[in-house]
Length: 482
Image 1: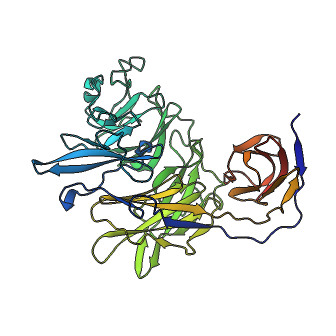
Image 2 (image 1 turned 90 degrees about the horizontal axis):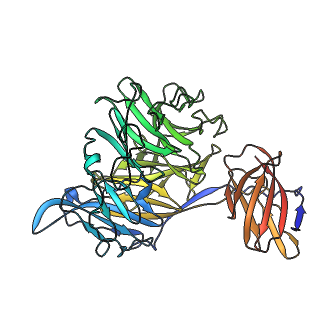
Image 3 (image 1 turned 60 degrees about the vertical axis):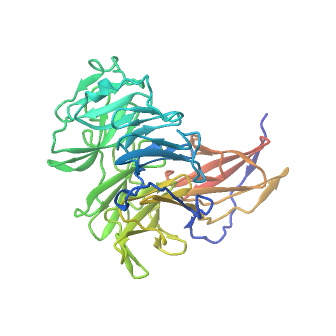
């Protein structure tokens, strides 16, 4: 019989500790936080060509990068790829000495994993040898000349979205004859594009494609398309199109961008702006507004910040998701004409968060002339600036209003943050095997094995928290989500 030790809710609470974000340069990465790629090209082309919104940019804890190069014997611009280890060093198991060099200029890819990567030019390269896969059949894919984007689906098949058709290919490049007619289906008029429409791949999930649409005939939006039929899923949002704006957002604010939430459930966070203020909303997995998000379904903040006499604007920047936070980059131009960055932060409960003690944190010491990206992954913030990649460590301190005092029974001491908000913290003198949270109906709503759990998506109320330590002993705590 398992042993359960019940712990009642403490009546007295500790003082509130305001949560904040800490961002520091990760000095263990590269040379004092920065990896520099020597491309050997003129300054005009001396930059890393990374596509950070593609999940395969990261292969576990390794980083996949492409960039142009040339050499003295042949000044023609060509492409090469590298894979970095987690500390920024070259992964020597990749290609030859960590590098794969191509004979032409094709720096962009649409998928990469530890064994191979696909380029937009319909070639499959093996990451071990650095050579094209001799078994890959590219003829069929090359016949799709009007493709808009390509991706790899969850089952490993290659998906190509063309103006008037969806196409599927097997991992070896041959047509998937189980799909439509010889691997292709013709799109209906509401989904088919024309040269005046620009589509952008968002993500695929459970045999559906989610894509951004920017059309001359309508506003920016996200829509959900059934891969089996090529039709809009009219049960999603408003007849297949996501709701991205609610009544709490001014009518003057336009939709700018969406980013997939960290809950990995098909929900995403939307950025809107009206020139002075940035607004965030959340679309749930059904395509409708999540009214529990932020304050009445919206989080808002200033569009620009001034730091050390420089005004940074977030107008053209995409937001980033980091655990239960939104990190909003902003950019400016320094006196030398280069672009510089800074970031602000928001909790998903609607509160602005201080970064290193201030509302805005400039990423000092980095800038770019030609090309730059900034994005979040795991506990890091990455900044690509020309031919450099700099990494920052991101940490969040928890709001710990009402920490239950240490309780000890049979050598098992435990305490939790109570009430909790966007994060539940568990402190114990033993290794935690599992933390399980149940609602008042007895349903399990969250399970984890970490000392900090993201609880931003839980509604307010009373929950039962079951904490299991490594030996199997359990303790039950009643917790309040505020």
